[in-house]
Amino acid sequence: MTVLPKRNSTAAWQAQDRRHVHPFTDHADLHRHGSRVITRAEGTYLWDSEGNQLLDAFAGLWCVNVGYGRKSIAEAAYRQLQELPYYNTFFKTTHPAVAELSEILVGLTPKQFNHVFYGLSGSDANDTIVRMVRTYWNLQKKPNKKTIISRIYAYHGSTMASASLGGMNYMHELADLPLPGFVHVRRPYWYAEGGDLSPEEFGKLCAKAIEDKILELGPDNVGAFIGEPIMGAGGVVIPPSTYWPAVQDICKKYDLLLIADEVICGFGRTGHWFGSEHFGIDSADFMTLAKGLSSGYLPISAVMISDRVAEVLSSGVDFNHGYTYSGHPAACAVAIENIRILEDEKLVERVHDETGPYLAKRLRELLDHPLVGEVRNVGLMGAIELVKDKKTRKTFEPVGEVGTLCRDHCFANGLVMRATKDTMMISPPLTWTKENVDEFMRLATIALDLTAKDVGKK
Ligand code: PXG
Image (cartoon, rainbow, N blue to C red):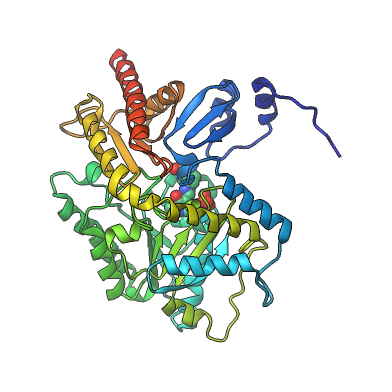
């Protein structure tokens, strides 16, 4: 066995890291600067290998909902690993942790969901859903009803099928995607694309784009629509209130299965257990759950399946699909403890009643800043739009440069905030207090001022 010598300096880790291919990364650029090595986390703070402390306003990657350093979660995993580290749920077996988690998820999700399938990531959960949609319509003797409609700039994962569901051009380009059977329509992004329309009018227009696509392809050829209640990676796009009711009506009218991708919005992020509740989405056939399901402590995802779909899928045929680690005991034990914390500490209620509204109030103060065109949030999921001209909403060119500048100033000043193009996005642990929001505002203002200075110099 190769035993690596103990190296514990930033430079040594950076040198070793040169062999590591990172997700979504320009490696030439990364190695010019060297990776930042994160070594420790507690609560809502991270520390890097140089001892710098960072306020994590992004909960890892939209996922550490209960915050870092939860000993009870580590202990739940430890106990489970000692008692039963692994067993599968194939071939008519189960184990207590997966059975108990299933009952908990059925209790938390809307009433049509009484069935769960487990995976390890949001991507594989969405892949599973694509297979289920196809299987469902084959069993319904409608083999043509297979195309799935999604939105431009949606993010649903990185596997071949989930990246096809997603609407990111740059993910499609060099991978010959999307696969056949996936199409994309416009997103309900009022600030960028709404022009003179009211948000309500614009919401209806974007829903109509789905209906137009169904009619163009023929309703007999379209099997499902997928959407994140609020688009996350695409820029925290909060649809106008008219959007989701119209989308649900369209799905019913043309008999489409509705998929609510709750990977980011789920488990309290919006001040509800699920983003669907905020928008009144009550007729979904699938819900994709990941991230906040375990707060990222171990990888696990779940697909919630509606009764009408589950009935067909279990009508005497095998559903030939599953992963070695579907319903992994330790991941299930972690998810159960994570949900207990969310419930016992009333974190969802706190986001709804206290920290979400407080974040909204404090974000509005940024509207006086010369770079800020719009701020928006639902619960602890928010965005700050940086624009060249606040009146006309004109963006900077090239798009993304100013967002990256701002993100780098955040990092240099002790704050982790993510940028999509020139939209700054926040999604902190749900344990944030009002004081954390204040600290965020102080650091974000420093970064915004420094960014404005840089822009002025140009
Ligand atoms: N659906 C949604 C809505 C997501 O946000 C996935 C599915 C895929 O989950 P996995 O576990 O396979 O990553 C996601 C993931 C970003 C970023 O930069 C966002 C995600 C993942 C990585 C980066 O904002 N979301």
